[in-house]
Length: 379
Image 1 (tube, rainbow, N blue to C red):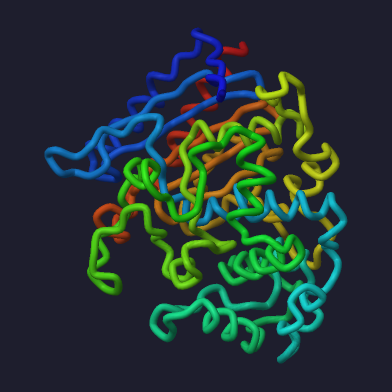
Image 2 (image 1 turned 90 degrees about the horizontal axis):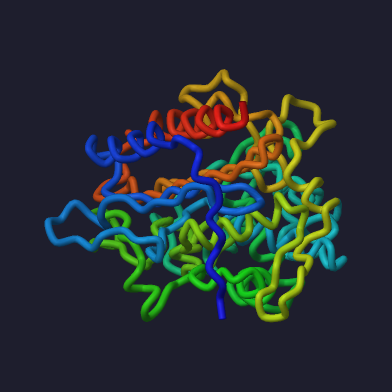
């Protein structure tokens, strides 16, 4: 039996945060959302907002609704799986990718390491429009295996889905399981993340919040089908995207990370260990010692430099000791380790079209407001 997550604290004034999320719906930034704020002790604010779509009779978003996480998949599934396999001695971060994927050796790629993939400095292109060229998973992988490098590996950060796709393939190669099966058996089920899955079916499919009305390629409303085109070609199970989940489930993982790898197993009524504290430290801290100014951890983002085209999603007030990730569909998860604070904000901002970018200013305002309210309570 899955126990209810504890909700703690009634003294925080999150009304400004609540207003920001609600105003986002009013502005048409997204039709609905889930917001969860917590610590490693429990949830301090949780609310679902709005509807699945803007249609008159659209279902109301509840805490059971699941969202297409897009690139948040890279950390909740892929990086978490790499962490487990690293601890098991099955993945060596400094080994060449070709050790695990022998096809990945041509055109200067033979020296690219697993660490390069996690840091997004592998030399691979930022983006390849696979859906304009291919229809099969095997074709996507063949393209990646045979492509040239676009810059010297290790010389700079170029965020790329290709890195995460390859990490997914490495996970499958060393575990002898599909990515979804490995994550489910070794991470999601033990943590009680019962609504987290790739390719939702049955009741979970009904709970899936729609994303885009695809009028360019798939020519239909997407619901329970991964929005990301590359992940769709990969069969909906890919290291870069494809995971569906809700804020409560994701909280279970992030809480475990803040508790240095320990979680409570309700079946055995015992504390169990998901990760070693040293592994969490290694993967969630900004990686130092590179030849350029790096702001990434392993798989995870940390607080980016303020000098960017857009405001940073995690807001300006978050501590330097933070880690998180965003997703193209309108999802974001952030942990402020100094404050022992978790913020999970899930939306379907791509409904009905991906051209809606109003969330860019909402997310930093929201995180700043959360931290402002959280800090006031500590004064």
